[in-house]
Image (cartoon, rainbow over all chains, first blue to last red; front, side):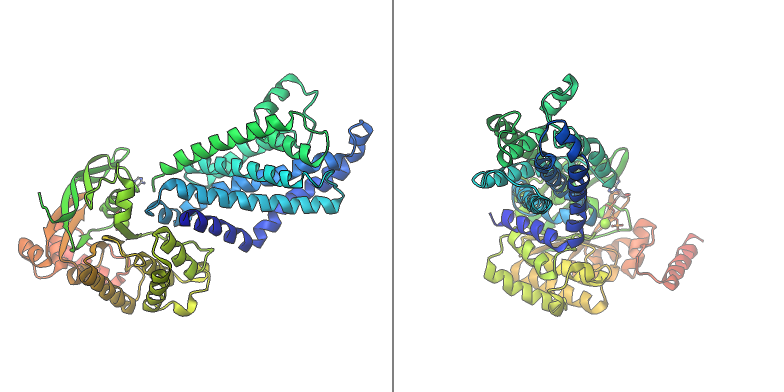
Length: 249
Length: 268
Ligand SMILES: Nc1ncnc2c1ncn2[C@@H]1O[C@H](COP(=O)(O)OP(=O)(O)OP(=O)(O)O)[C@@H](O)[C@H]1O
Ligand SMILES: [Mg+2]
């Protein structure tokens, strides 16, 4: 327990202390909220979609959570480069405790990031439709955060350096994000797109968050969303634990 | 079979692709002994330590640490040792105090004892007044001192020190060695160290293994090594054994010239 707690705490401290990182990583979601929310909003409304900011906000929150979570998980690459990873790898504690502490810590950070974006969206004019559902929204954000931090950990466990990081960002994270329904409704998609969005776990995260923040807007239904997210989360945790326990230094 | 051995290595080999970094080496380290690995850069010292400490898989050979196999009983092996790495291994974004605290928790040192030792060790390495500074603000030598303090925070059965004194000033070096010798005597901790400094190996180690190109070329106390090679100083013994000068990172250009001249005279 001590191990998990102290590594969780470490992730939090690193996050709170890196102000430039927090501010930097809020720029992008803010840009999306403003540029798309206000830029595409009028067209979206004319097309009969309703208020685009209401539709977009859960997507932008998910995006922030995805990026922060993947990044937190992949911090292993930094720790390897700067040497700190070795210190934890030889410690007389099960590796899965280390993996879990890091991952829950990273997920907490990603959740915090999601909440900040939520607050920014409120300022921009977003209005959640049910206060009762807000705790559920928080739970979903944490679930998504955990899923992708574990995925980041898994991926980073087999990468050696920063080049690999760039590769994963471009070939995994960006597609996950753009092909998730964060920006567009999942109904009436061409067959191939529909298929891709269906195998993308982030789609279910966005959909679940939308379903809890905006009434009657879920495409898959909360039951399916939560099932897929939970299963994917457990699989990623197991994969991450396995790959992390095999790291050599 | 040496029954008093706490580390046993038999025919250990490590290959990186085709390159043989450690070539069928065998040695024992006795319980309570201070044992030194002495060898030039790239000899295979760190690679050996990484295998003994579960960080690398050996290509072949058997290893026992405190009776356990680092390949299959990683947990038991990790409970048996502490280590100061050759390369940096601190978290820059944490303070000195936080780095020690994290280590103490990972190694389950009880809180009160942990705090006591943290203060004591920070005094010893002269960092008490900087304990709340971020490590990223530390000089190279200060980081090194903190890493050593951290390595000594829990008292394991075996302590691995991979070139611990690199970049340290002479006073700190002396402090470190007297502290380590004290631990060794009082708590019976076995110490496995690597170094480039022959006078250091000579002073602190009970036995020295000279390693070169992945081979152990001699093992014994410094007196035995001198006898074997019929030389007067450990440096000459080392030259006789490896035909190599130690590429000491701190050697001055005058030293290098001196060593070069000696090698040259010998060749003639
Ligand atoms: N991960 C690796 N991949 C390939 N070669 C490696 C790797 N690690 C070490 N080597 C090689 O193995 C040899 C032994 O390296 P090692 O780090 O064990 O030397 P060392 O005795 O510790 O030297 P130094 O005194 O410089 O620390 C070197 O030639 C090195 O280049
Ligand atoms: Mg080395």
